Amino acid sequence: MNKNVMRWSFVALAVLSMTACKDEPDHIFEPTDLVSTSNGLFVVGSGNNYSGISGDLTYYDYQTGKSSPKVFQAANGRALGTNPNAGITYGSKVYLTVTEENVIEVLDKNTLKEVRQIRTTDQLGDKQGIKPRQLFAMNGHVYYTTYGGENGSVAEIDTTAFKLTRSWKVGSYPEGITGTPVEGGHLFVANSNYGRGKGTISFIDLNKQDVSQSVNTTSVDGIKNPMQVFVSGGEYYVVDLGHYDEKPPYAQSGNGLKKIVRGNDKYSSETVAPATMAALHNNTFFTVDAPYGAGAVTYYKYVSGKATQLQGMKVDSPCAINVDPLSGHLFIASNSLVGGYASYNTNGYVREFSEDGKQVAEFSCGVGPSCIFFNTSLLWR
Image (cartoon, rainbow, N blue to C red; front, top):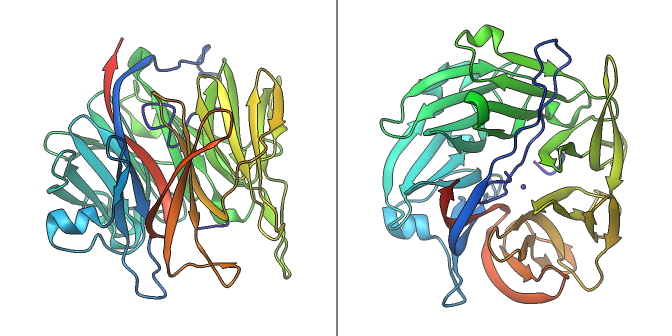
């Protein structure tokens, strides 16, 4: 949803730990990952439900410089389904959330053939299992968020039998999720509240076996619609989409990359860079600022407490962003323009930029690109 990218090998959605409770951890733990190879990337196309356009998966091969559309359909002989939203690679597999189908597709990373189709409503029930959104993986488990009922859920599955091992209720309409494997593991979740304001952050302590005692959910002053969460240099950051005017043109404001400031009894935030989406690489943020109704798109690099506008970068209607963990190159997906306006019924495209903002390549992808993630091999230190 426009109104409403993991610092690991795919940086798809990153990290924030917030809780006002007394059992808050004393330290921020960051993963120490080592990417050995990066061979290409996947682009999730969400399609267009209203126009009857199924979602798909595009693969871009670094060696050949060519993109292959609808690789899921080619490998499995069927369409991916309605509104796929996110994807990750973990070990030898690819995991994809297909929101309107209430499924997670598990694929062999090399052949892209289906290994298992997980029905989230079978695992969490018809109420809490609806609309899976984002994914994260560590310590032999994959975690996914669902919109669920009044409050959403986070589910943990093993990567051998793909069975549900634990689940937790979090805040309203959870989106981004990530975590750290240090000291038994912790998860961090951005609860968007569907863009209606009063979004929250949930912290899950995986050491606690009693799931009712392991979740802390808190609000942060100045954060209304959190979508992405990061940890960098021992500080917490959130991409907050802010709010939208109730009357046309429904202008978006209050959005940005925001650093969390800890007080004695509450948490506040300060905006450090304009943003509606961001990616993190080696403690450097790259942001795209394209607020709804503004008519202009700007790009920034934020490092060492300073935000600098990047000149020369351009896409028409930005949808997703990520940074290759090995090369540091930035990839931004966009809707195409038809008649001067963003088209939600035609194929989109992705542009590749160097770290200094110079365009390197461009390739086509499916309709409604929603997520970029990388075909990497990962070694842990």
